Image 1 (cartoon, helix red, strand yellow):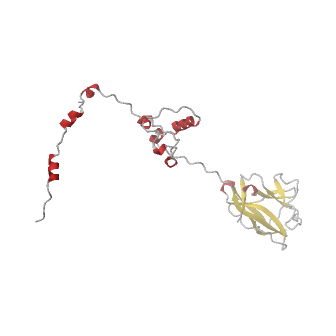
Image 2 (spheres, one colour):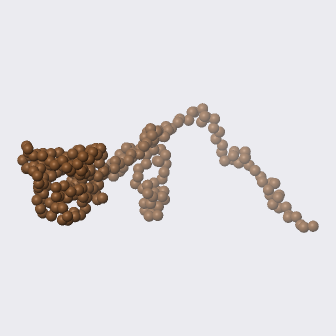
Image 3 (cartoon, helix red, strand yellow):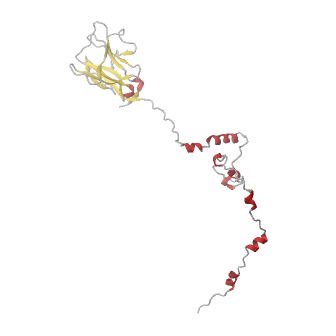
Length: 267
């Protein structure tokens, strides 16, 4: 079953005896598929179909019931827009099933008539014979526009959101891009040498993917410098080179005597 545009689905099927009695939103079927007149005899006129308001109830199924057959569940007889003193034959009656557009998967998109035993309408389903005409309907799957997928957002917990540097980094990047003076770098970053091999742009083998990307340490991790107490500084003993050599001198006598000892001879 082929897909069809949802705006082409039928929203109503009815009988009408003339153009004057037919509602303006309905379209009268005046000719058959083979070009003959589609006017039913015995005074009850033509079929008419409604294509308005495809977002409301639509026709999902259509059946031709024999006389005295019970009406299937969910079905109703088609409407009758007739002039006075005009009646519709009750020997065979056409009924339709209408469902909300949002709940329908299939729908009836068109109805055609042919003269009995004349021709077959491709891609149409035969409903049955009524007063010398064969009734055909075209069914299909509803093709609705697919909604655009909403962009997925990353779930960031509270602690990670507090560490986010996106705003600060974006501002620093814009300043570097437009030549504005850069903000003071963190203490840890300021200790890095500008001429390190990995960041030296003069060497093509030393170019890093982080070149040009500003780095700012989060203020949360920048600890202020602590002042060393004067009492601690006064307890430090400053020694000269001579004092150090005399205090930690080592003559290596044992090592030298072991080095001059002759190796043992085999007995």
